[in-house]
Image 1: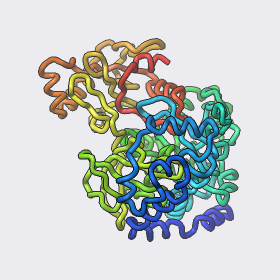
Image 2: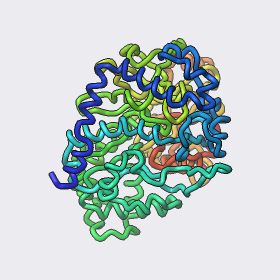
Image 3: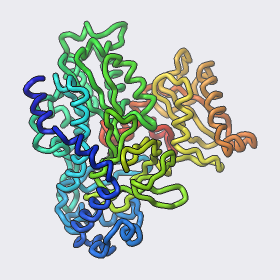
Image 4: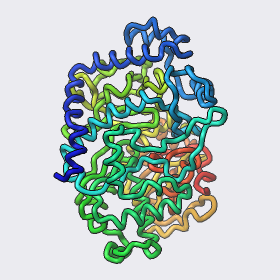
Length: 515
């Protein structure tokens, strides 16, 4: 083990073991997190509004404080962004992070010093467990997809508070800041580029020139897959000395490009599951570890090497679970095999906040649940009463033989299956302008029929089709589908590395894809 690896292990040592010990008494740990959080913020406007100083238990909390969405908190967050203090939290707001979400426009999420400690309460045990299990991942350089690539630095109007984090080490703390800075495969200045094409070229060149790359931490697997596609499409333009040796018939040999790459951390649940599988095919010699559930608003679960499902981050916030019948239960009382929507309470001023994620309780570790991310709660399509949820559509797409990226889009009289590649379909598909139907090739027609049959597993969809309320599914070849959706998400305020591949599109997706 090298000196740098030893220092990282030393700064993290024992955190994973401590986290595991907490799981046995997760009920008490969660109760303590909640009461400390409420005491800390009892004098802010929100705390006085709902009597935080009178709350003595999680049951009191559930009775006194309402479940809220971002729209309900937006007026208070607007006051905070204008520079007003003591609104949702008592401590100063260090910055805001911007997120787009799946169903709305831009959202500003406040960050405080204590809320960053909440992130670290889960991230550091994860890293301790990760590098103890895979120590060779430390024996080289690393690529971290954290910085808000392709976004210009901004501040809030009126308050002048930064939007976006200018130092990635803030997530991990000063103990690890030096290691992260020294191990970077891509220079930090690249993350500051605001033009996506310039950022892609600089990132591609840096990565292809680095034979020592040992670890990659990204969010969506499509982020890396699209970056590889860019490398393959622009190989002749990339100024990398060894580039001719890395390609075979125009396809990048990832194992040859990065012979020491041992570990890739990325999302592998929900709509990312299929793409994580594609990533494993491109990197046959690397371990692909799924991330837990982490959002701009906070950290919900972390992966552990000895657990097949990410475990609730019991010290990163207080979590409740909302069942379909409206009942809310604490983490220790969820039922294995049941599905819930996550409610988050954290040090950023989000109390009983509907973050919008649905999870399945897979098992328990002590009193803490191990969770599978299913999809976004409330995201669905309902043209004539068929009520297709994103979760259901994800399962349908998983059973289709779609080459490359694919998603389902709600249209005026039915649904359209959008595929990035159609094999030997030869469709003219979507050109530079608005999407249009392809040439009715055999492959596309077969995909459309298969999708239609699978959607009929939903009885309301089958009934609507039988009554001709919905037309059969059409299949369209849409070149650069992932790239088009990525551009749209960036314009909607999402960080480039955080964009999740959508399984279901609603609204004016034709204009969206023409961007």
